[in-house]
Image 1 (cartoon, helix red, strand yellow):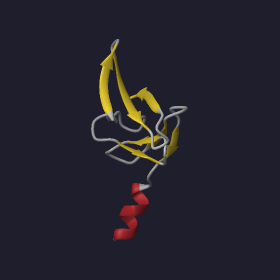
Image 2: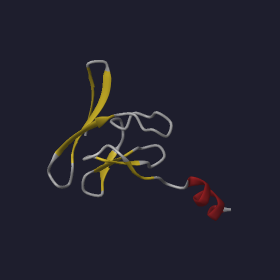
Image 3: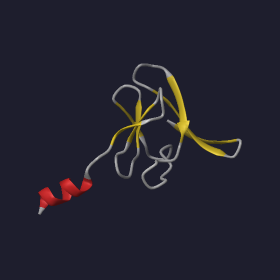
Length: 77
């Protein structure tokens, strides 16, 4: 995974587990974190934000998964 700055935009470039190369806008829609810094490849062709676990599809760029941190916190109480 690599974070790049190209033509005024932050881009994350990564190779999925399917061996294809993907490029997405690097900002997480949740809180604006740069996914290219500390993110990880999951579910074959998705990239996951390192802060709150939101997951984006490499093919479409759409958010395909969100972690419910409130539920996790409540279960720990």
